[in-house]
Length: 556
Image 1: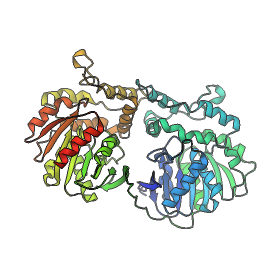
Image 2: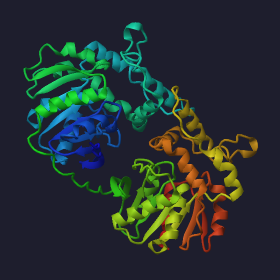
Image 3: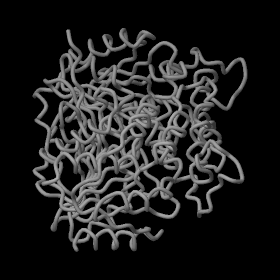
């Protein structure tokens, strides 16, 4: 039997974006993940449940790609109300609920408030803590996350994640606190910390609320069928004895197998006994949000591409980010450009939040994905912008579809002379191979930081230092690094494809530009001279002024 296909979607709830994964058909099972994770961590359960149900796994507010709640210090009841609003937006009247860890706390509060909307609640690890334990966790478990110049916040995140499989709680390093588990492999750990890095400095916002919530008291008096379960090896299995006394007749506890396949079957057994009365409604279309960037997925060539949109009117501008990376770094410029203009940015396949097609990365393939995106969105003639390797994609598209490009902006194109390209390409981007100690994160961090300090980044000599104002703010570098880590296995091959491709001069009006601190700024003016009729501009560091310069070129 083939595995169910998981599709990703957004729904907008009162102006707040909610990202979710959906698979299967039949009665809905709505799924809530632990913190600080996201819905991808529930993938084995999504696939398993989708054999019999419509499995809908939400990114809870502030995690994954879902927006934070508009609340300075949200509590579990606030998350439960947000869940109710999300189910309303999805047109789900009644469903089964599956919650893991923090997700179980949100789910049980929803059950308490809306028992008639729940056919059954199933908890994979329930945070039933004593008051003393909750106070201890609030005091020691959630230190602030602050990006540091030396990347030490990355190693702290890496080892704190590993530590949860060694000690429970992680800040008590004694024999009696040894966990009944072992750290994951380096590759699995890398996948596990990604959502934590995505959430960044807001990781405690939702996570801390579970330790302020009296889960033991909340478990009493329920009127909907509820199973409190935990897998062998889960630290929250300790809560089951604390819960057994005082549960309603419709509630019970179970211990599930340690292995994921056995756990999926165990939970399926319960869900099949208490299905929701109706099949899940079809996926609603996400509405645009006036005045702010709207995110959605667009199907192109069998892959889901992440698309960001803002504004309306005039000739639309389509933006291609630098790859490897994500278009989220273009958002400040998008906002400034979208004055009387529709602006669309996308993540090419295998980059950012777009699907990986499994094909070898190439600039022509990215240009073809761009064509498919424009066709799907009904975009005829467009202005086109590409940054760094994205400029190569934009140029390749313009060469193949000149009649569809009104203006072309190449921002910091990778227009290296052949001798420089041959010297730099082999060393510029090494494969990212996760290490048990997280050392690969520091290697990537300092290569990104060094890009602003030396050319090329790996050649640290007085003669190679860059005399620019460096863009090395730790928060910005962290965003850039996270965009790469979403598809880190492609890192070296994407760069190799970018260095291997040298586009022909496009036969459309071209502006070649770059900010002073752009890595490839040194090659920009020569690139402009090589393109007949092209103009050159050094972009100001102020985003608003840069946007005005670009819009003036488009509108001229």
